[in-house]
Image (cartoon, rainbow, N blue to C red; front, side, top):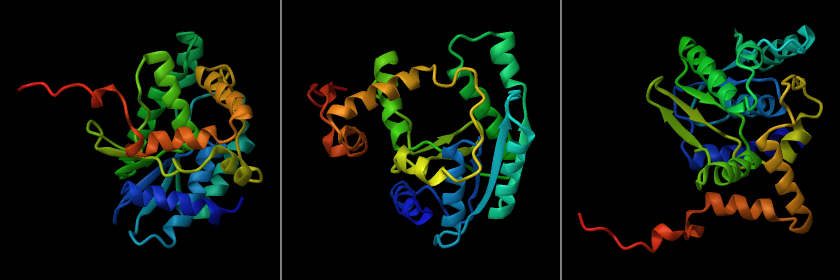
Length: 247
């Protein structure tokens, strides 16, 4: 998978949802996983020719996990130097708080909030008005099912969302890109292994495995679900049939 093949759907998402405007300074949340590394490559590539000029930087939130080697961390520094991207590492004690102090049995939600808070603060300090996250098409689908199964809501994340408190706008340029294409692109890139103790033991992993199981019988199921979420004309739920209330 070449970068050029990923730039096309990313550009479509950016254009469809007006993600990038002239003068934006965009911070990429660079965890070092395949998704965030691919996103950094995409935005660095897009920066070369996109009609709305923008600045780009990258932020890594160091959670304090002990199993990440210094060589792996240095590979991200070298990647950002190679791409000409300003880079900052934010040291935190998130892992200690979640796993040692609070001993969370389901840590993902709290971890996500704490990491997002650290990212937002660093983005503001670096003068950024936008924060780019590496969520892709599979994440969009999985979040929809997680919300339905565990919260009883038909909901997923937005492609663009503004956070009033920090005045930072979240953008997700990879929502049209499938995980398999990201995995193919990133196979020879400097990827950090996931040192989280909860990796592969989460509700999201359960939903991912469930959808992949369905895919064995319905090979095109992910495309159908993604289309149902992203195309408003396919929406046909009960609120359409309720009579309008008199004011």
